[in-house]
Length: 488
Ligand code: SF4
Image (tube, rainbow, N blue to C red; front, side):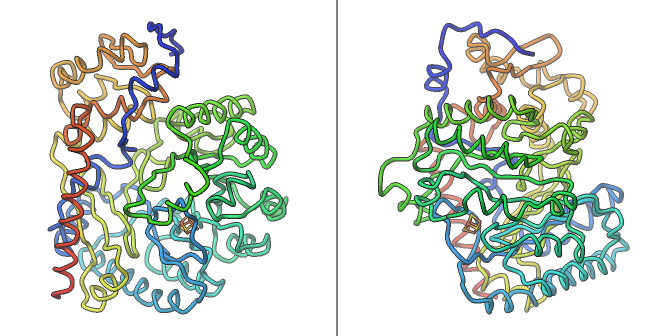
């Protein structure tokens, strides 16, 4: 697969040629701005019952959202509320417990048992939960479904709020076996410019031998595109990552959206963020450093040590990319609870709870699910969703696979897409073969742009302003749905 570029363009020129101002990561396809804002509680219930009855053995990724943090990181676009007090957390938990009850009552009434293989506590920051509340929540889930099938249980960790003892408690008393840290960058200046101070020594101190023995996977998130990041700082950060030896590193690109995350403006007070070319150089440094240190690239933005279970899963073709990043499992069938939580049932349904805590609580009080948008996928959506997953994780579209799954002939079904890739083929980013489309190693870093050719909602031909208009339309639909919830 390591092909030589047919183009005479340098990597920098390729980046300039294919750069787009608004890029989708395709954790979902269709992307959520195209979901239906009239998809609400009854639709969600129907989708759950219908899909779970049809797929009783499918493994479920059970997600719990804790939308609180103690301090705002200026880059953050997550759904969260900043609080130094534990009161809002205390006030939220009974609603979360009630949503869990509502969910399992619905499933019990329909004789459905959830086959949960993964449990993931994310946020915000679930680290904010005190020991007793975390254990109580875990026990509630243990009473709700068969916990013995759970292979991975992650509690996202904010290293500034824990010590090694707390990590051991999460493992011994609650069963967590996977650690996920928002590491983001070790450079002092970068950390200062994003308002998140968490030096290398802090990680070194909490990742004791006992902690390492307790956790099978230790994952670091590394955010690319932060203010002050240079090739030099990134080299040093990578050296420190390698020294700490997490089993998995998940990179992501900073999304600069000050219209939804106002504090992001503070990141540019001292100068601009790295531009797209500089980001590419940072990604090259990460790639070179991690690969040299023995990490294998699992997907577009994910690296793992050969000992991490992700590597075996990749070999078996059982890795999937979704809202929680690259995860084990042929599919990530998301069932979630908590404000703003997304759901994803097979390739059939998407759903998402309302962001607003008031709306969330009001719905739960009224005994309805706080679903504020979702969609049922058409056959074409499913085909293209599979294409996006294959391209960004397995670097290919295998025509035989699509024929078996969907009964389609890729050559005619994707005739236009194949033609539209011809320029990328000339530049050596893809190879169009008799029975497959391959993303070349040079093309790996362009996976999002290549995938975009298979997106009929926001194809490459759609201009930047047309894409912004789609976002604006979704914002208006969201405002309307808030009106609906107010009227309840
Ligand atoms: S990055 Fe994490 S810890 Fe920081 S504000 Fe966002 S959710 Fe909270």
